[in-house]
Structure formats: structure tokens, C-alpha cells
Image (cartoon, rainbow, N blue to C red):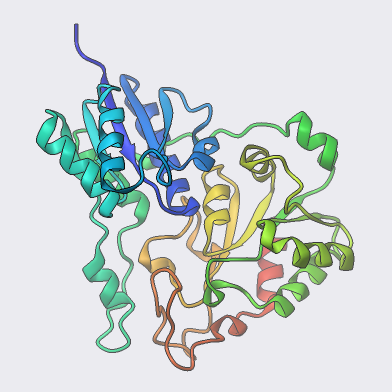
Amino acid sequence: MKKKKHIIVFRLSAMGDVAMTVPVIKALIQQNPDVKITVVSKKFLAPLFKNIGNVSFFTAEVNERHKGFFGLVRLYKDLKKLKPTHFADLHNVLRSKVVRTLFQFFSSIKVFKIDKGRKEKKLLTAETKKTIQQLKTSHQRYVDVFSDLGFSINLNKVILNTSPLNSANISKLGNKTKPWIGIAPFAAFDSKTYPLDLLEQVIDQLTKNDIQIFLFGGKNDTKILEELEKKYSNTISLAGKLNGLQNELNVIENLDIMLSMDSGNAHLAAMKNIKTITLWGNTHPYAGFAPFNQPKDFCILPDLDKYPLLPCSIYGNKTFEGYEDVMRSISPEIISEKILSLL
């Protein structure tokens, strides 16, 4: 009897990076039904993979059982018990290198790692001798790993299913009776965050129409979002109000449009096949982190004539002198008109 193929997919990191694996994994499972996948990531990200057939989730306890070098050895032993046939390293950092190397030397399974394209990304973000070009997307880099392992994936044929609003969310938000717009105003770095005073103008313009706005953010954002909720009609802050990521995803998959920074919420919406408009500051979609399967004109960039050296950074953690306020060159009218044109 032929042994069932079982791939360990290793990707820790931030929520957005892990969310970008979802369309790829769905395509792999849909197009290779004889394959089983175990995703290794942090516990809070497990809902991203819920209800995907033939996909299991394994929690990497990086602060407890799997902490440090000997913890990674334990992680390798724990994963080996699952009897995988392939190991896909979609992270390629120290932790994944250790586990990957242990599989390479002590297990007879196929192992491949992601090529992050560091050299071309360095040229893209250089201040001098810059090379501006569209780089391979993160989604395609993930596909390449599976291709190296021997699995064929066509991302153009992936089916991204959504579910209706669940009873818990209906009890808190009511039934959907008008267009729902999600707005995720925050990002990991200020250089990727649209100025709040300009965002308020966007909200003000949108609320003049018969739509419902939901504001997304973490617990640290609650105060700011609740102030916006009080200030504008048809605007509800969801920060701290939904019981876990699963319910948040359920609201997202029932949106008509998501407006997000270059951040995790954009990828959560895109993996649910929701129209996702993104605002870009010192980063750029050319680096390969644009949301999955979204038209290019859904990415709204700063004035590149005024700021020709963009992007300054891949992740938004550095900027060039004089480029601190590039997002102010994106007018609120452009954003609100784009959203309204898609309703």
C-alpha cells in the first residue's frame, strides 16, 4: 500500500506572514487530495487553518517546551512522531533551520526551504543604486518550496470558501442589512500607518453613505478606536469585543471591503477572498507582500514623483531622511472614492 504523503509546514513569525500561507495550502490540498499537512506555528494562529480538509495544526511552544536549542530538539522529536514524509520550511530563520537540519540528518524525508530573495530585496530598498522592479510574491515563494518537494500547485485555481455570520457575531452585531466596510488603521510601524487625522476624513466621507463601518485593532488600540466609534455614526469598534480570532475572521469574511495598512488584517481579508484595499507608506507591494489575488490598483501608494526613493524598507522598520510623512501624500478623497466605487 502506497504511503500517504504527509508534509510538515513550518512557519512561525507574524500573523500576516502565516495568513499568506493559507491560500497556498488550500490550493495544495484541493489539487493534491492524497496529501496530509501539519502546520507548525504559534497557538493563537490555529483558527487560520480551521476546517481546511487534511490539515492539522501543531503548536510550537516556543516559550515553554520548545524554547532554546534543546527545546527545538524536543520539537523535532515531537514532529518526527507524526511520521512526516516531507518538511517545508516556509520561514528559514534560526529556529526552523535547527529543526530542518535535524530532519535532514536523522530522518529520511525530503526537506526544502524558502528562498526569501534577500539580495533583490536589498536592491529594492537601497537609497542609492536602487533597482525598482516587481519581485516574486511571498505566495509564489511558498509555492516554489512545495514545487521543490514535488507538489504541483496552481494558485489561479484555488477555491477560497467563506461562511455566513455565526450566531455569536449576530448576537453582538446584528444581521447584515447594508454594506459592511472593515477598517484596520494600525500597523507594526508608524511608517506603515496612515495618519489618524486623515483617516478620520475617510471615515467621515464614508459615513455619509448608507454603510456600516467596523474598526479592527488589538487591545492596545481600544481607546483610540472607541473614540472614533463615539465620534462617527454607523461606526463600531471591534477591538476587544469579539471572542477570539475565529469570530474576528468570521466578521472579516462577511465584509464587502477591507481597508488596511500593509499589515496582517489585509492578509486575513484576502485569504477569505474579500476585496482588500491597502495603503502603503515606506514599504511597497513590489517586495512581494501584497494581499493575495487582489488587483494592483487596490494598492494605494504615496506620491512616487515626490518620493522617488520608495520603498525605504521591506517591513517598515527604517526610513530615509525626509520620508517620514510619505503617507500624507495619499489624499483621503482617493481612498474613500476607491472604496465607494467598489460597492
